[in-house]
Length: 330
Picture (cartoon, one colour):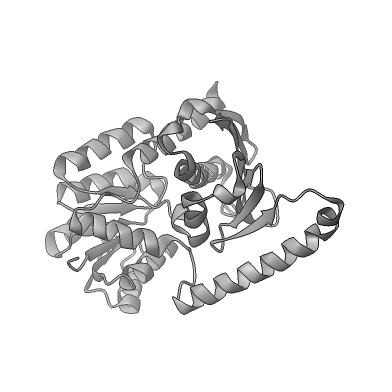
């Protein structure tokens, strides 16, 4: 693979972690772009980027690069993505990729016509725990239900008009995780929006006789982000904050019932400790799965390999998000 020469567009929190992960995947940071030039220059110094710019348009004219990381608020994505594609850049953009299904479809078509990769940051399926389980869950038996729960503080301090949007920013996570288990068998028509109000999002669905549940709350505490995969032989609990899975036996007996909290507790501590050691050894200090996704995206962009996230998954996320928005007005 040739060296990725990248732009980081947006010098906030996610811009920093993209820069951190990009460097560890062998990339050269050609430029940092942010309207706040002092913030761009601070990130430039921290990661040894070649230049800093206030304007993406100026940056694309003056820097040598081939990949853009879009780490700005979602409302700014469309203009930035279109500008990068027009200047022959592959694009990795934070979620949600774009605001609506029609926008998403149109821009994906433009990328395809130009032979460029356009990928959103759905990093959770690339975590070790989720990836391993999605690839092989035969030990769980037939899948009975998948349940994703997220309690977030991400809307704290935001005006009321913006708080509900945070729920939609989280929505691609469970959809992308479900997609890894069911692939193209998963469609937007299978989801029903039960609630989208007062800081709560509740969605359920059925695919291949498996129940699906999404519960996202701005109010619930403590914060959490987890996926429980239940089979008819066993279950698995994925800690999506930290990227590991803990398995739970499906044994049915009085003895198993008595020992359950002790077995599960000890397995949880063991799995969490093993995961901490692995992440420490690889210097993965935050956002598990992001570095793996970036690595696979670079290979796809520069070596012509398939994109790590399919177009079908991207469109599914956009279609379900539109369905949620429509539920609020119907």
